[in-house]
Length: 113
Length: 111
Image 1 (cartoon, each protein chain N blue to C red):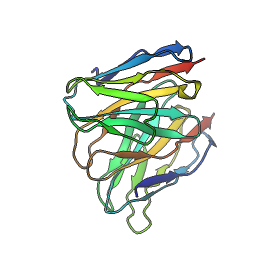
Image 2 (cartoon, each protein chain N blue to C red):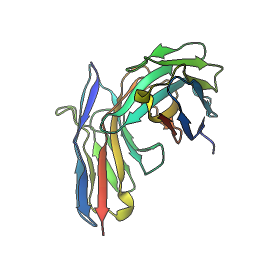
Image 3 (tube, rainbow over the protein chains, first blue to last red):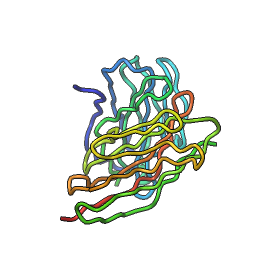
Image 4 (cartoon, chains in turn green, purple):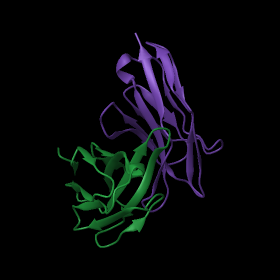
């Protein structure tokens, strides 16, 4: 019952440091997503990947890069972390079809000091 | 464009009270509609969904009906419990794979 697994769960970074959030899904889904969640802002899409080999910008892509390593894995990289990137990050996946559900990981709490 | 608007919280209710959380959508065409729930410290979980007009999604005593005429998908529960305390998100999905989420409504149920 793994579903969507993301790591790490908690991370503290200094301003300017880099890090990569890892995500893997075992449901054979084509589409994967990275969201950030901030108080009062709900969920905002950072990047998504409609299928293996493709990635597209979402609503708030600045300061982030992604890699769709294979069908299972979709990583999010912060090249030079900023305090504004302090947030909770959620990876998600879905099958590409009308009405299909999106499944979320448990979240990664990132603090940039 | 596509978007989802849901009522702002926080909402505080006594146990066994009736719950309504409003959600309206804007979209060209007919999106699929969802309610997700997020318990403290966890990711979002699907609560219910509806894929076409007049469909009713239901789960765990919660219901929502897809109303095309009012472009709404309001969440209701007849008698809330303390364990329903969580943040609720309305979401829409049109063709393709972009989901649009509302800002979330925090619900606290007190004994």
